[in-house]
Length: 277
Length: 161
Image 1 (cartoon, chains in turn green, blue):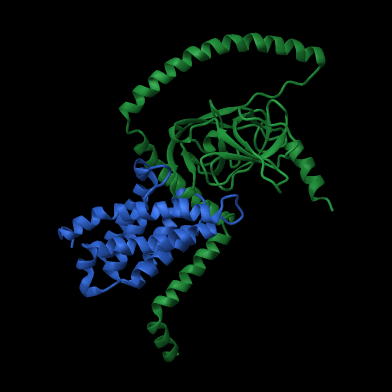
Image 2 (image 1 turned 120 degrees about the vertical axis):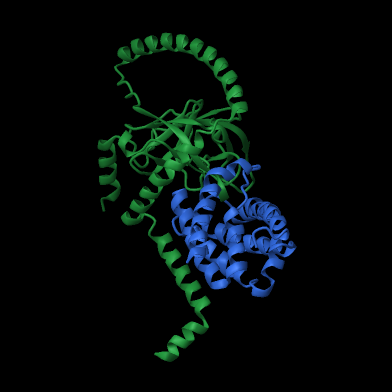
């Protein structure tokens, strides 16, 4: 026993190093564990209070610029609202005519971005809305410019959002013009990629990319961005499509969390079908 | 005991600065890693064993605060502390901290840290490993090393030693 203890003392740096590495690996493997999620939830709630305070420090230069942009946006939106009112009335008439069911409107919760983590590709944001506001894991986050990401974890008053520019982000998407489907993912660069689109499909730079109806998380027809580059490489079955996000993540300050989009009946039947042997 | 408490409080402060304020220094999406500099400092002041343990604790704190991949930073920062600990020399601590050696140690440690980080981080994703290491990892390493100039100048004037 004494000998064992002596060996430990002699190699204590290495023993402790290995033990800590093993603990880290165990933690990595239990990321979805309920206890780990609870600890993360408490930490986010605690840190959120600091973030809230720090985010209130104003940047006057930015505020002036933002004010100008908002004024311009206001004029454009007023014009667009008038046109949309007309379009909606026309839409109602046509839907009634063909008997289509109107898509349910979104229930939105407004949240301020009180923190951003852009270190070593961990692209997440902290929002000052949480479970007490009805926010839950996997709910979509949008802004006026389109899809932002999804809720990763929540505490009672704060939540962490995973941005589209995150290695684990995936979303079913389609091209607005040609209705072609694909999967949106990020490869670490400035833009997103629309994967799984065959070379024969019709996609052009400038096409608008929207969320598709195949997703259980994201509602359909939310703008993701636009196609900025289409390349075809010999020997590859698929096109390489670069998508520029509609949202400027560096200036993101206020977002909306969609709190009621999941169709439980659809989820249940899909689960039943895909898990059936 | 007092020293450990001081290190603990400073560690919390640096984690908060890293997660909340370092974005001010972000250039082209690259943020310097203040925590690596802090762990290297602890390694040079306290030795390999202490730096390994502090590396684990600081990494875990960072994981909890950023909200995803619990254990990843704990893993890489433990290695960071262990590697930096090899440069510990009780008699030369002030000399190392106040000279270009501090920058070189941060450079080496940060490079190892970022490489291991991205080897794990890019698993099962569309992000290319080489792309991540050379574009983000190397840039972060050099940016972090550049930032080390600041504490190096402070230590060369022997203000906090």
